[in-house]
Length: 218
Image (cartoon, rainbow, N blue to C red):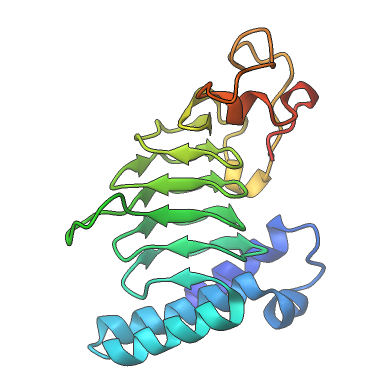
């Protein structure tokens, strides 16, 4: 657990421009606090102390507005920026070096008792308010745009956006979760055609109408 904590702390310091020291992240960044609370709860869950683990989950949700089920499997080197509203379900798996922002949901799509939550690959960037629903895989080193609703698997090294989300281009860099690049070049030929004026019923509206003409998707 100690190695995971150190990797998480390094992730915050290296990726968040508002973080100016390890001490600052350790003392004041609630995304880091919530993540390490989960790690304690997960340890207890896997060692038969499920009631205590659920109590920690409850307190984490109350204090930090972050709800991570203690049975979820999270790798190391994860950054949860701002953190408010993040929800990660029981059977979710999050790989190493993932970055996610506030409002991200890794949820299920029904009342199944078995494996029902997303699998997030290594190095993925989940932008503000991204919703990934169901037992689907988000390929490594990919990006999910702000406000997107992902219902189908995402190939590695791609960017998806929209409601429902669809592939709109490449990931933009080899390590999107560490570069934290939320921009999309205006000249990208895959930005839903030539016009950014779309109906609210268009499944690409989430990708086209949110300041894409300025190259911003956050």
